[in-house]
Length: 395
Image (cartoon, rainbow, N blue to C red; front, side):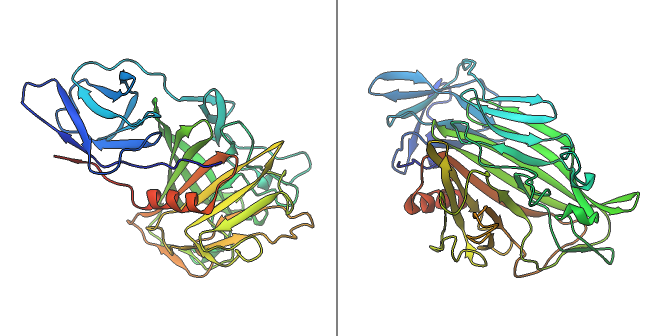
């Protein structure tokens, strides 16, 4: 199935006479249908009610839009259109659904749950060491049709939690701390606070605070603070974007040192339905599951059989990330015999990274989640749009 990929169109707004109530939008690039477009708001539009109007062969229609900071975002119609802004109060459009339910923040697309973020501490199965409890991760991550792509607490790795990002080999205040392997009881990562949430007709987003906690017996000390900004952007009935921006700051006056290790950082433990017979891995450098581990990549397709169909996600690393293109950790084809699958942008697989007090350190990732399959050219185009989105200017 051929997927349309997210584009940010560079639009130019032509402002005519001061008393005019309708303003046309033009573009210096090819107009595209069924994509996400954006434009920077003028000072007047920041304080004046307005509608966004699309003119197609079928006539004029009001288009849902969403404001985020100084930008306006909307999804273009299935047919190429000409746009204008009218200085009238916009109609109320149905927002993307977001709700809290039993310790989870849930996001829905077309009444189907696509993303869950775990705020409450997840208990462990009976008989399992309670050290494996944790919060602050994404699960489930489902396709638009509701097919689950993640799993948590598998028996082989009780510390695996859907999509999550602890560090494995760190040094803090002279001690070596492992925040990944919870059985070591050296450290953990936990949800601390919901900072913000916002929904609209174009996307849903929220921001949370994570604490990286050093454990010393009964004592705890927060070594690192982490803000996660998570945005879910539906594209169509078959795909959506899951954007994750991670910002780290030292929680004390001591540096936080991440030491080279073969795994750690942004990881995905895939559904237990996948094995070496029904799933596929392909990186931006053309590597497959046979040889992707240890290679570097800008993107990685991970997909496979889901019930009677297929689905998966394209993992994208932003070019401004530390040590980009990032090293991959991919489990071998014979993992546990059947080929269970784990994929990780292991930022520090081949280098160290030090966080200094008073500084911010940012990592940005995108998952293009889809039903069906994805080809290499579509993946490459998606990465280009993530890496270099076109920026709006006003004329």
